[in-house]
Amino acid sequence: MIDPQPNILNIFIYISIFIGILLAFEGINQLFLRKETHKEARNRRMKMIQHGASTEEVLQLLRDPAMTASGHKPSLNARFRGLLVQAGLATSPVWIILAGTFIAALTFLAAIQFVVSEYALILGLALGVATPMLVLMAMKDARSKKLTKQLPDALDLMARGLKVGHPVAVTVGNVATDLPDPIGSEFGIIQDQINYGDDVATAFHDFAQRVGTEDAKYLAVSIGIQHGTGGNLARVLSILSQTIRDRQTMQKKIKAISAEGRLSSLILTILPVIIYLSIEISTPTFYGDVRNDPLFPYFASVILGLTITQGLILKRLVKFKF
Image (tube, rainbow, N blue to C red; front, side):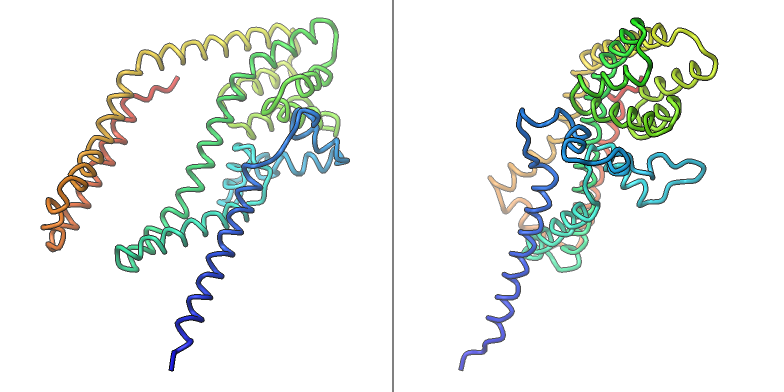
């Protein structure tokens, strides 16, 4: 007689894998596969207004209160939501958690075929936590670079509007309308804050906290000083725009000069991995004969740790902050 218990267990595992893949697909679809056409509004704020959202709803969704709270140290949840805001994702953290859970489960199921369950669990948890965070940090850096590149054009547009007599709120609105994301949505939030009752200095201060770049902080400080003391704001914005452009030019020069060092650090970091893989493929017995030795895991851990440390040190040596 055939025991049905293993078949039921296999069916349960297949159903669980199917549900996990379905949830992961929906999460990825919500995060990265947003469809848009040329007929839609040019940024997320205008899209929300186009679909009937009020000014308060736009602010609540695009301006996370955790990003503008001051006077206390932000909690872990607040910092995570702040990372989502800086990455440009107006999505629930639940989807990120589901994606990390799916990655952890998939890694565990793949690793358990080669190592013991304890190591497979540790590896799954590590990748489940690290992968979404690394993706969010990469998205944050890409968005910050794009916003910093757009900021001088936005300041020039504001300065030209101020020179012909437009108020600050109108010039901010022109930036929100004429420039694409991410600067369009960010200045749209500033415009909504001003229209909703916040003063100009507070709106730009919240913008600097939300974005987290040095140039945005310089802009917020300049607006705050001018708002309190008075002066020619158009000239201040023009000088700040030129300063940001000069800094970007200097960054490109330094990046070009340090290109050789960065390439050398990359080669030295991945070279041990390439050597190991080539030996493993060409001569499997080279490491296979000693893999069962009790000291092998310790030596392998030390070599892996030294390789990672070398990569981090070389990265720090060729990374310049200015």
